[in-house]
Length: 293
Image 1 (cartoon, rainbow, N blue to C red):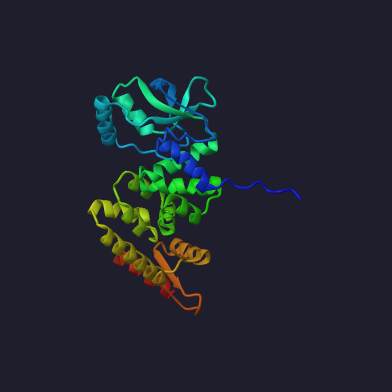
Image 2 (tube, rainbow, N blue to C red):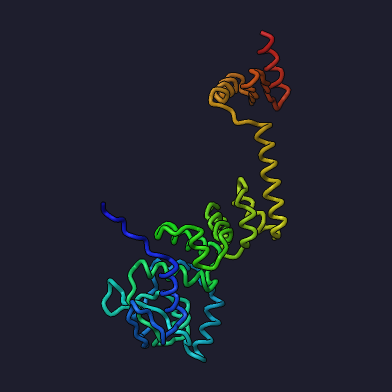
């Protein structure tokens, strides 16, 4: 019988990779050779699978000012670019790389690691999550990537990352929101608490715009989402969706009478109402003559 290859254990791989991120230079990974050096800034390039996508200009400027006066204290983790000879891919430290460019720094301290694509992606996600360096959307996408690409469960992630399972589950639920709402969250126009309150709403994008325009707090947003659902439920009960046959009859009558017609048919009882609307006395007189024939 052919044995199935065992899945790489997250806990052991995490501890090994995070040893690099914590810069324990006197205790390098036994599996990976390392070298500490500086590299020209133009030889470094971001990791295309980096989970972090939003970089605050204000934070980058503050970091740039610090780098200009004190230099880069913590080296970047890089690996040789698998597609470009003489180039290096940033595994951890893209924010420092961006700030260094703003500070016009020409060489950057690095620690070079021989990592495969899987380790690079996993490390990029975990390093940012562990440092609380991601917004809620990016963190949720990071968890989703770890689960989809590496088969990790919520329970395994919770243990490995020191997070509660409910925290991970709540963040993953954010990804059910429309892109418009997620954009508001990424841009800081609404908070994580606002977004959580909108998850169960029937029209979260519309409610999110109301929250922003009226500067509602989280409690007010929860009440808005709850009342919206209640009102919509009542509206649906009072005005159930009309079937195609009913709409066709309405259309035929409107074409014949040249007046607005509304049919409210109750399928369970077979009863209903027919409403004919007019806007002038002449239309009413014409309708009366037609009905009296």
